[in-house]
Length: 229
Image (cartoon, rainbow, N blue to C red):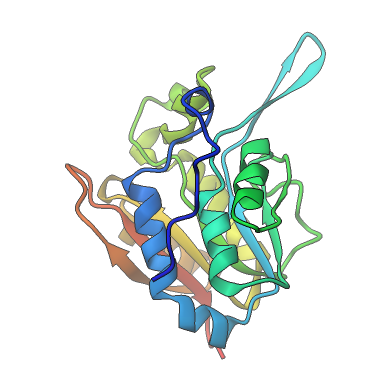
């Protein structure tokens, strides 16, 4: 069993600005560990991407990069499959970089809105995509809240506003042998997400792992192109 990445370098002040790893994070780690042999022996990844939710605001003519995320999932994936791979993490967070360094993993944070800064350069080239999105059902305007921690979890209508923006980007970027791991909860209508990915983007899917956590039941959905060699 691979241990959870060391986050001792993060302080209470850090968690005022970034999303603190919680039950959904640990479900994601468990799902990746469950998939470890498949990832290493079947996918054999060279480019791994974790998508974060980053907003851009123009304030007094300056670009204000707002971000959230500890880098826990990217670091765990890097430890899981070893060195020699490119890890691209659009959290644009110095904390993500520090988490990698704390655990002897070199991550490359990139500031962008979801994946817009990486496409089309990475079209059909990404082997592993991990996405723990803002999934909580909220009012639509909450997705663009000035509170950065709120943006980390506020998903708008059905908790799907950010997820739905990302689905076509996932389909564009996955390699022929690539897989995507996406966290969703019951309110997000995961079966509907799977149907969209199948009928609109040609991606097959399955549920890798589910767990009841309080009143929520998050699941890790896995998407891939058929046939997956």
